[in-house]
Image (cartoon, rainbow, N blue to C red; front, top):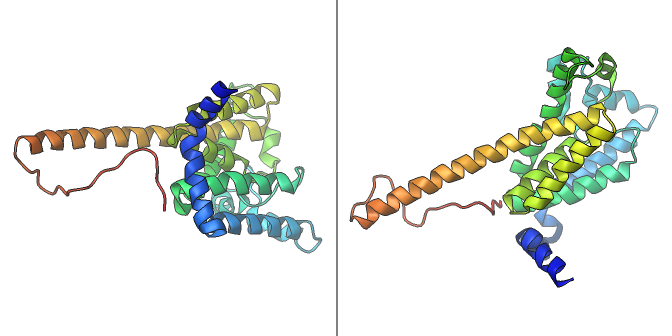
Length: 250
């Protein structure tokens, strides 16, 4: 039991403390974007289940691979908050509240939205590529998937969960989420599962870019420190300036 508790502290300790302190100090004011996203998702669920509202939601936020690309890109921002009709809405609401909320506290609301849309857009664009490749290609999709309505926050949730876990040192959690998505595709090879993998690949590239930028910045700080130790001050330097991998909060 002690070993498990020690592992949990090492894996989630920094993430837990960051989220707990923000919620204790500010409560829902710490996650205004997440609260708005939950309300918007609930509203869209209500509207699309009304006879007068179904077609409106489809026209505004339903993405299909057979749609023109410009139309799919135009609908993508809202499609993230349109719950899938064949899944219970409480699942989408819980995912947004938990994962978006943690991400908003840890990396800020605008970074959360950017990452969410990057992950969602990666899945949307992959669907078009997969259908072009065809069902017999390793990463291809059958032509019938072009007519599947592609909405919901699942790809964004997967991407955010992996990025925040990686950013805060919960590497086993990030690996577990990735492994779960791979198993999902192996057990049930469908459009949603492959889009989740596409979202993970996009977020993985972002993680790599952030790590390389941090490493380059760390190298520059070490070089400046060597110059300062020699009694010289590099041009344009500022005292007290620095950055490190975790927290990004705003």
